Image 1 (cartoon, helix red, strand yellow):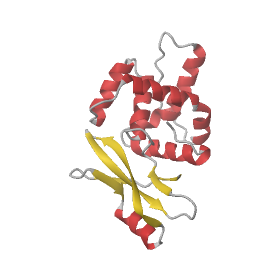
Image 2 (cartoon, rainbow, N blue to C red):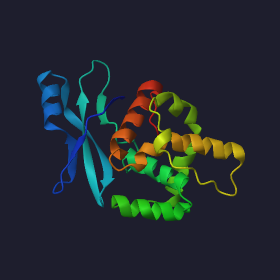
Image 3 (cartoon, rainbow, N blue to C red):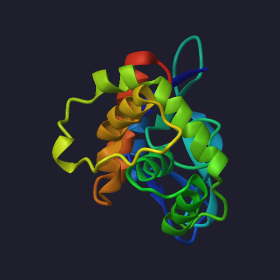
Image 4 (cartoon, helix red, strand yellow):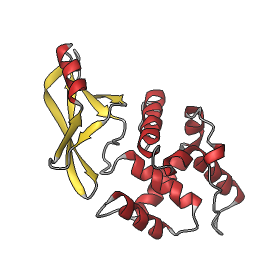
Length: 197
């Protein structure tokens, strides 16, 4: 199966358990004859609700091609911005991972978000710092909060996390959280053919 990532926003209606792409996008693809009748359905957790994300399949001669929103990460139940926000919040505060996880649950209305999830996301992103640096062309130094080092971090790890926070700083701004995270995931996928997390 091939995945085609798109920066399209998905509809999240308060009274429905399904979400999908905008009607305009689906009509445009349908009128061009690009959509198959079948859809792929994935689970997504937002605002204390479990939703079903319907991703259209595009016509391709040899394989199924899934149209995938950049805000969703495969095999992850939360949107990408929640993971990135949690990592940025941890690096910019002296809070423990458990406290950051509790703040993330509260801010995004999640029933569950564990400190171990934050730990795994931090580790994955740390491994991708060189790729992420090449993907970001935005100078975020002005809006980057200082990193709060932990006593068990070596100087090299502290420098890695400083670079990571410099990349993720825009997600701490509520007006940029979703757009910036989706764009970063989109760029990562288009350059490396791998998702951010």
